[in-house]
Image (tube, rainbow, N blue to C red; front, side, top):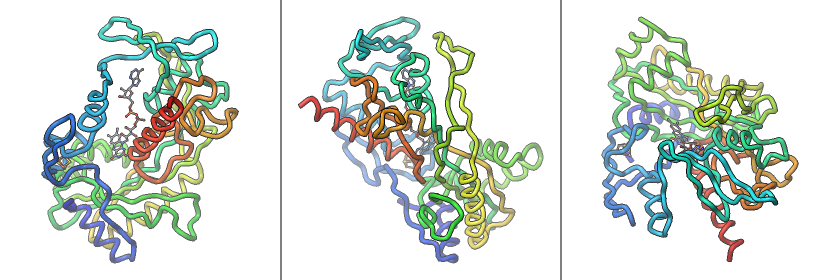
Length: 358
Ligand SMILES: Cc1cc2nc3c(=O)[nH]c(=O)nc-3n(C[C@H](O)[C@H](O)[C@H](O)COP(=O)(O)OP(=O)(O)OC[C@H]3O[C@@H](n4cnc5c(N)ncnc54)[C@H](O)[C@@H]3O)c2cc1C
Ligand code: SF4
């Protein structure tokens, strides 16, 4: 993969400071590829719109990979369906799900259920239905990555909208020696479109009005780097049910989250490190943005049913034919983007489940 200008700048800055940086793993194809059960995926053209969608099919997504494969093996995908209830028999085992499709209420029976609604909707559904929560851990330990960003102006054209966005990473701070915090953080180069940058500058640096417009005027010469920093599980950070209900009568989620001492120490360390990298790369008018990212935890995996929601196979401790398979099962936050770990855990959970049926 070609690096974008922010990645080149990060490589310069890291090299000057003796920090190791390397090309990031990118789930895309750099040559045309016939994707089984889907069609021709064309090589990446470095257009830089990965966050909005990929016009060539280069980027790996579930619609080009797993879903066509699953369909080819007999799966039926039902879109625009919202699960609102999980039915159980007298022994508490799942017997079916109730869902709404375009206003119509329907039912699907099942022998086993995989709940994969994500770190917010999975615990929200379980709490609404009072299900799989004998441990009291559903909704607990909500985590979000410390995702501080540092931006600056360069003399040269950066044009960060062009090129694959996050093409360079450094893992030197993931477990750095002699630091004042547990865990660490991954550094990555950035590339975002103007509207995303504007929202980040307003939310993370409080920029508004003329100051915001002035910086955005220089969009073509701005470059940024950011982190995914570890977040420790904490009793104070949790998802509960709000009083307000949605159109289906289910309580909405309420999330209470704030940084503890360790997250604040990681944030401060990362600001110093990234500012030094950007200075060494030749950036001016450097500013840091407050930011956190990703919804992790809330149905954690563990070995003890009193302290965790699912076991090491992703199976509920309370309901033996209920599996949870999404980022809610993470017991810790890890210092990296979560998607690859979610995919690895999904394959592992599927393998363990199939092994019990052989
Ligand atoms: C803008 C953005 C950029 C990101 N960039 C990256 C990145 O570069 N790298 C990375 O690793 N991660 C990235 N992430 C994070 C990553 O996308 C998530 O961590 C990941 O998708 C979570 O996967 P999941 O399977 O747990 O949940 P999801 O992907 O959220 O899937 C849950 C699914 O369940 C459905 N659902 C929820 N409730 C119900 C219900 N009641 N009935 C039926 N269906 C339901 C939802 O519609 C959704 O399709 C990004 C996230 C965002 C928002
Ligand atoms: S840069 Fe991203 S969106 Fe553009 S072709 Fe490559 S993978 Fe697709």
